[in-house]
Image (cartoon, helix red, strand yellow):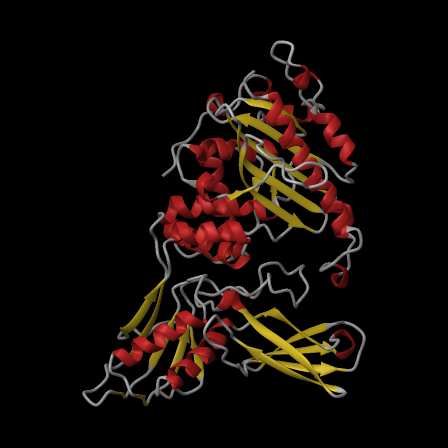
Length: 500
């Protein structure tokens, strides 16, 4: 477990007062600009923190903090104790929580169980069960290996039922109920997840109509599925509608939005049946016919393993999660971490509360209130000072920095600065009118800084209708301003805090 940092180690001077509760309301909006060492003209002409934030022209507040990693001293901050949505920056905390709870070498398992072993003739006269172990990286290729394992076990026929079980994790219909139905980054969560719980929808024009398909494709396979059905409807809006049918995801799409053809991933709301149908197809390709999948809530006590596959090690899973910002991975590993610490949580919110408690206890922080593990829900809050405190504490305890994404230092035109002399490892976060960046900036002289930058125009975000949330007007412009401000701050810190 992570050892707790004292406030003295984390914050010194005025910054200690920032975490003292009521005194936050009297905290200055910006720290004084550090005095330049010597007569270094470049340092003396760098814009100060308040000027960079003001010049960004962002509607809505920003919370910024910077600390030296070795001492934990807060070097500068702006509204540092203000809690704002972290967006996907939350995944950095989730990664640390999972590493501390499960260990870097932890692996998820997906198994085939049987209630009766196969006879000498290769026939299973009982049931078989596809049992998920929560693997967030399970794809169709992995299920194909599992089907091969069933054949390698000598099975040629299954006479009983084909059951599917996802009880290794609580069943959650969607991560954030405030998202549009059709966005693939907001799928359901189960202990049995396939292809990030997304189904591939493809359409091509066929005269005055369209040919559509729904499949669970991967690098090697493209099995079509019937548990997700799409109907093209003559209308202008909404573009998509969803209804949970009897053991099926029922979709419609507006014909006017399809053009000549295209494809996109849609979320799956009945993940166990989705994985079961794909496995049924893959087992059939091995000559093993299975009945249609049926969901079960508990595993039979007498069931025994007959085939299994494992995920890669957790550290690799987390590195990919931080690189590609996959929401399903964050939620599944967060739920697994909570289960390992205190038993399976009842809900995503309950698991997030357990992570909040771990973060506060480990680093002595106050402004931490996540509602999920991915940052997709905009009700999550963390302040820049708290995020920096966690980053400082984590640096010596867990290999978080090593798996964070490398961020280039760029100028205002977004061109990379050659030979910048800094290394930036960080996690980005983006929602509509919310932007975050937090991580580590290592200067040319070896000085290591921890930083957090959160911005949000929450009033404008709250005013969006459901139809506007995928591509809101003005969203890209606002986000561009936020990213330019983040880079301007990184450039400032590169100059001001480097040794002369």
